[in-house]
Amino acid sequence: MKIAAAKYVIGRPKTFAEFAARQRRILNDAREQGVELAVLPEYLSLELGSTLPEALQLSLRSTLESLQIYQSAWCELYSTLAVELGMTIQAGTFLTATSHGMYRNRAWWFTADGRSGWQDKLQLTGFEKQAVVIEPGDRIAAFEQDGKRVGIAVCYDSEFPLPVRLQQEAGVRLLLVPSCTDTDAGATRVDVGCRARALENRMFVAKAVTAGVADWSEALDVNTGEAMILSPMDHGFPSDGVLAATSDDQEWAIADIDFAALEASRARAQVAVDKDWDGQLRFHSVEVLN
Image (tube, rainbow, N blue to C red; front, side, top):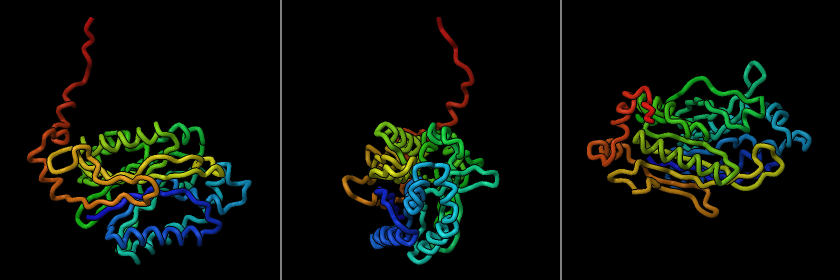
């Protein structure tokens, strides 16, 4: 399967139509390179905040409330593009209103045959907690793609091993990580989390990122990091686990991933953390030695 993870430079569209035209262009560019599954970054929908009156752009609360008018159009856009382009699209995240006045950081999934689904972010960052209006998700999903299972871990979620392990045990062998980080330290933490999840679960990981400066937005102010596609660090794969990564002004990290080779690597593994996982569970306490 050929997959792509975006390094998406935040723009300032004046209308939803302008935003939609850019999505069509970049996803068509990926499809022309043979991409079958594309990952866009976390908080992508907040770029639409630039279509709002300036008084609403700097406050996250007012931006989220106002952006709900686009929610249906957002889903229709990516659903249509997935079918037209014949590819699966993980459309970053749209912070979606709940019935009790809060918002969930929701990662959407659209397929070429018209199916859709979503995974909410499970762990909130300090920024999201301080915003008060965002709440964590309460379920973990897995998605079917051409006979394979795919999971989503939204940004900070990639730093927590146990939920991803549940996805792995449910058959997930490709983890998609839409992310948005505003410091080098934050980008590094997500990179390390993604590498660790690939290592311990013997899975591929595709991380999309935002890039550039959007000083008009409280949440999208500064963006850093590189898009990456990772594998386990084992026989048949790169020693650093990096199958592809963006640099400079590249829009996509693109790689062919081989699920059969992934499964075959288990039999000749150098370090089989995925098989040896249960070994750590036999310990339940620490003996303190004086």
